[in-house]
Length: 205
Image (cartoon, rainbow, N blue to C red; front, side):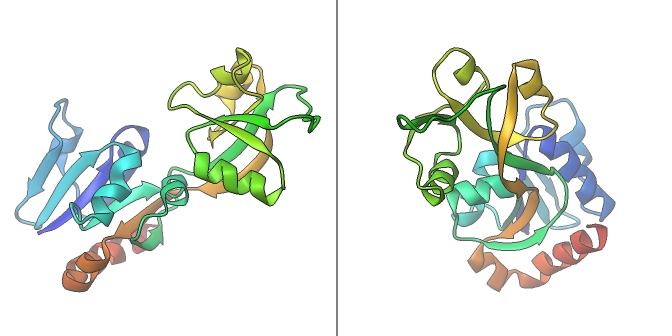
C-alpha cells in the first residue's frame, strides 16, 4: 500500500480534485467528518490528511511514501525528499510587503515579521541588508500596522488581504505551487506504484 500525505485546507480541495481526476479519488475525504486517515484497499492507497506545513515532514521520515506540498514549504524547510513534479496548482508567491508608501532608509536593521525565517534571511543576505526576524504564525499582515515590524515576508495569492490592510507588495522573492514529492527509500522500493501515480499527475498537469 502507498501512503500519501495530503494538505488540509484550501490547497487540499484542489489536490483532492486532481487525484480524483486521475482515478485516485477518495469520497470519504470530502465528507463532513474529522477523520485524518482514509484507505482504499482496492487501489492500495492510504490517504493521510495533515497540516500543509507538515506534509514534507511525514514524507521525509517515511510516515508517508509520497505527498503533495507547496514549494514555499520545501524552500523553507529543505527536506531530504525527491521532488518529482510541479502540479501547477496552488499558485502564489512569497513576497515582501510593507505599508503603502514605506521607504527603507537603511538606518537600522529592518524588522521583518514572517513565518518564513529561512527564506527571509536568505533573501536579505543576498541584498547585504541587516534584518531582525520576528517569527509569527498567523495574521502576519497585522505586524507592520501595529508597529511590530517594518515589513512582512509572506505568501501572496491575490493581494486582496494586503490591500484591505493598507499594505502593498514591494518585492517578489519566489513563485510557489504544489509539488509531488516522494520519500527516497519509498521511491526505491515502491517505485512502480509511485510512478503510476506520477504518470497520472503528469498527464493532468
